[in-house]
Image 1 (cartoon, rainbow, N blue to C red):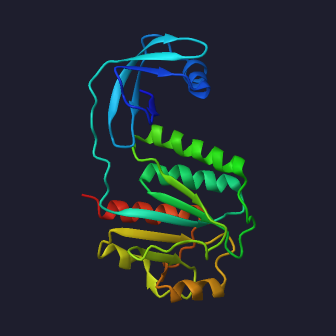
Image 2 (tube, rainbow, N blue to C red):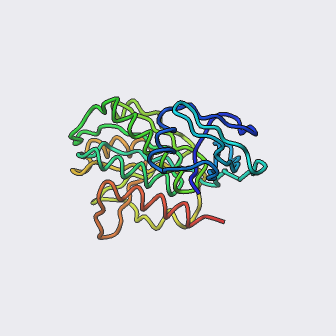
Image 3 (cartoon, rainbow, N blue to C red):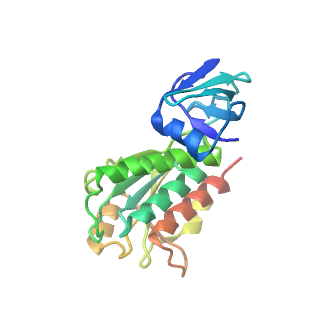
Amino acid sequence: MQRFFVENSLDDQYIITDISWIHQISRVLRARIGDEILLFQENGNERKYTIQSIEKKKIILNAESEITPHNTKQKHTITLYQSIPNKWEKCEYIIQKAVEIGVEKIVFFPSKRSQYKIIPEKKKLRWQEIAREALEQCGGYQPIILEYKDSFESIEIDPNSKNILFHTKDASSSIEIFYKKAQKKYGIWVGPEGGWEESEIDNMNKKGFITVRFGERILRTETVGIVVAFSILYSFAD
């Protein structure tokens, strides 16, 4: 059953007037009168609806069930600090997979070896749509937060977060150390394809970051953050 994220209240009758929604339901999904869909909110509330009518400028839904609440709180939260990769498609992949596994926030920023320094506004709008679609498809409820910074220096470091800096050499610890004792908040810092410059690593270490490695494995920039986030969230899951 198709799920849709909404911000409005889940009333007994729900009217859709957004043109993109109408197109998706009537043209892409080819839904018909009588078909069922699920509407859900950020707070975890969900309700089943039946399509009553499909018109050019609106779709009318009638509730078929009571509102069902779901627990959306996670014991551990992860923010992925991702240096901008050399291809925009990699950002789309990172966003999609981060939503699927339950990452709370992604902060994109250019590091010294990033090919791109500025993210176009049209890309940001596209990525927000990708995040919404991923949330609807994966069964989650909490929309991911997407933030964009123009440099490392402009990022406000959370003092309550355990910040993990990934580096392919000269790392002080192996990633296994973080699976021994759970933290409430994690910050995962991933460099671009060319890696971090030594001055960046020194700066982060001075701020209390812990440099870690993945043994002998070298993971791609679009892979490492997702793998680590998944490992942390599900190693300490109830």
